[in-house]
Image 1 (cartoon, helix red, strand yellow):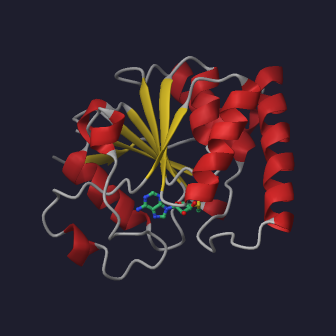
Image 2 (cartoon, rainbow, N blue to C red; image 1 turned 180 degrees about the vertical axis):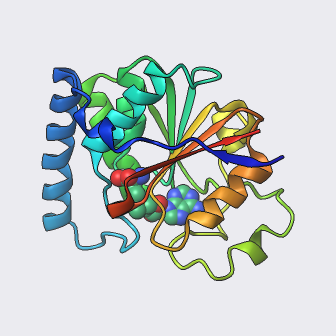
Amino acid sequence: MALTEIPVPDTITQIVISPDAERLIDFANERIEAFMLGEETVSENFVPCDFHLLDQALTWIEQGHLLAGNRFCELGSGFGVAALLAAQRGLEAVGIEVETNLVEQACRLAETLKLSAEFYTGSFVPREISGILDLGSDIEHVETFEGDVYNEIGLEMDEFDLFFAFPWPGEHQFFEAVFQAAAADNALLLTYRGRDGMHLLRKV
Ligand SMILES: C[S@@+](CC[C@H](N)C(=O)[O-])C[C@H]1O[C@@H](n2cnc3c(N)ncnc32)[C@H](O)[C@@H]1O
């Protein structure tokens, strides 16, 4: 199975963000700022992405009818804002995060905003992929030794239609390798690439 890029146009920055999404993003940013200032044990791996651009990319994906189904998974979910934005637009959304304190924050945010996204503590890297530890050997910012959480979720990676991740620079190939090995045909992987914006792949 190959991965095909679906180019995301720069013009997505002109897509209007709904008032509900704006409220969610503002609220999340306030919580994140307070957490970063107050929390002594913030994982150095946690950096939030550009949530406005993320919401615009989700709108663009929906408007282009690119989704094969309704299930969304945020890989390394931090505060869970991607999963929350997906839930707000009616997707069945989960987030997977290794840091317990970040999962707690994501759950609190979901509860406050009354959104149905669910968050799980553990690894998004499926244990059964052969050679995955070798693949991840150069990767500094993804935890590759924790157990995965797909049993607990009750869904395997190949049951999700859209994944989102914010890989550290130079580490997106690892996410792509996991996606290629474990996702279903037609599933999408959206990644945030900092200054290079959003990047979208389909497994075909
Ligand atoms: C760059 S942050 C992105 C957070 C969030 N997705 C966002 O865009 O705001 C990456 C997150 O992945 C988490 N992480 C690293 N390895 C992981 C793994 N194997 N499974 C789940 N989460 C992981 C880190 O703790 C960190 O919170």
